[in-house]
Length: 91
Length: 99
Image (cartoon, rainbow over all chains, first blue to last red; front, side, top):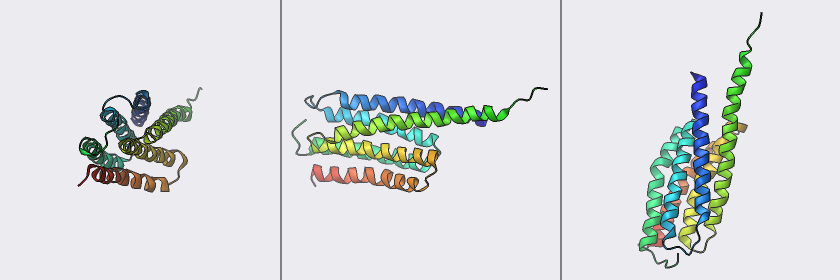
């Protein structure tokens, strides 16, 4: 039984690693001259955030995972809200 | 009589876990570099996006360091990063939005 749990943990961490690498590739792929690129980057960031939450659960850190799971949507919404209502005109 | 050595079997399983931890560590390092690249764009919002990604990547990296190398205080730094990273992002975004 312990071996199966170790295998599941390993698989979860490798899947999280793949998602994180894909997110890193997507973040630097697009240029800044695209319109409203910030929203898409915030969206991409959510993939890596949830992958990190799952990886933290696999690493036996549930308090960290739950804390970040509840905090990161507020942070993403705050960024998008600030960009929508703020004074920045570039991007 | 042939004896089955169970220690090797357990060792293989432990190696799979360690290898996956190293793979995750490498992926997080690549992600941290990408977020630093995003944080150095021209606008302030891009800086916030990059630093939010950097905080969680470094926190997960520190948890991996704690698990692999047994450095206990990395967990404390990770807790600080996970709590203060999004809260600082929210505060900075509120300032950019304007009250």
